Length: 224
Ligand SMILES: [Zn+2]
Image (cartoon, rainbow, N blue to C red):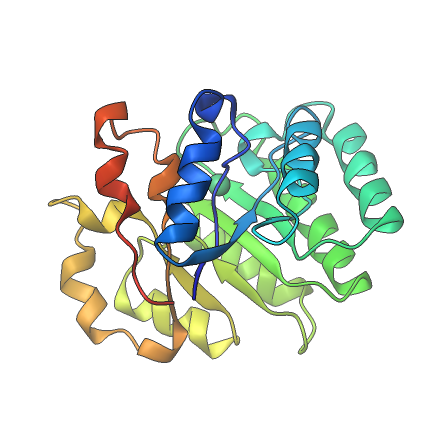
């Protein structure tokens, strides 16, 4: 069995072919797909999908760093509310993204800290999104986390040293479709990574950069 550790399969992008994608994934051995939340607008779709495919599609709860805006506290109340009323597999996806927009950097950092605390409270792992922000993200995790907190740096694109640091705090890394890009640089470091910290995954399902006709190609499965 394979596990997809990160797929926004509830996204409207899959409105027309979601069930066939899920079927193909299942046939290919992907029996579990973990779904990271984005913000308040993605919750209903995610829950609906989990209700429909309770064994295959598993929900997480969190506020994505790209969706941390002025009203982030309101979003976090909602996250907290959901975490209090039912079980989730993880708090995610959370983190810092300084690639698209740095306007709400301070708020992103605050939201990350708060959500790490929530994960600790509910004894859940965290799913980390970090882009152009490895140092900032890692420093916050280190400053807030307790010994028992575990997590995954999803779509990792850092250096060997950074991967080792991730392993040193007991976290794992997820390798996304970016590894297949010629200029990703990951081909140079992947062979050196410790295999026991590595999670292959198929973000490919939702890899927006891939044109639609290449979706089939992205159904390649790697062992987790
Ligand atoms: Zn994501």
